[in-house]
Length: 396
Image: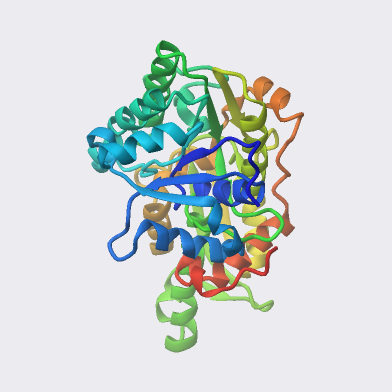
């Protein structure tokens, strides 16, 4: 039920992974939300959000939503002047969650258009609406590629692992400068790698953590098919076989650039911490939503060995020798995980002084075997997102 004591919030990115979970939590908490977004090719913005509400099991809260289809790159967000003025009059806070999360350098222009160029429109709207807070969802990795201790302050880095990190760092600088110049209170919220719900395993996206695991499953199925249907003609050439325990022995050497770990947080922690920040924010506050107990890929590999019934995966730190022979499974896996390789062995440490203070020392759980199983079982059940809206949420 709508709570008149809570601010009316305009939310971008509500159809994305993080934005949709924030929307669901805020609706449950009594917020009235104005969803700013675009239609898809075959669905209106309202139709896209309605599917999400069904997935979350909160269709009855649809009355707390308003929908405004906008274009960030057009004056007045591409909407008629009267509608724009009304939007400015009723909006009290903005959560800017929309972004292009591609790492690919070939998509540089598109990523910067979405994450940087488009800021002009939403920031102009913030100033015209005279909002009392602008919350920006960024990433913990704006600190740059060659940093060990990542501080909760605006990054001065010039070297990044990919175009996504670079664009988010530039966006933070633009937002902080604009808000300070126009006396708009603001926060910057920086999550690390976000996976599904730690209790149920449910998720709306299956990249980052999921992609390497999906790749292993895909490769496993190729060779299982060869063994079962073709007598293992190809598999046998590369020492791939089913052992006496029913495990597939799959020689797979994974080379990582350095020793490190994955900094993983579940989406339920992201939501809970973000809501505490929104409720208790200090202007100019920058907050790392990160895990003080990052998870080594070796641990995840052990979890996955039991879950997928495979053996033979080996984690090796350092570069593969130029003349080292790679079997077809390794070559295929290398292509799949290349964009994520540096994050699989990251050793950056994230300062959390601001975060711990405002969230009252709320911390994410350690990534356990039970959490891993819940997440993987759900991912496989919905075919890595292909059939995600076919299931009905049991209100878990």
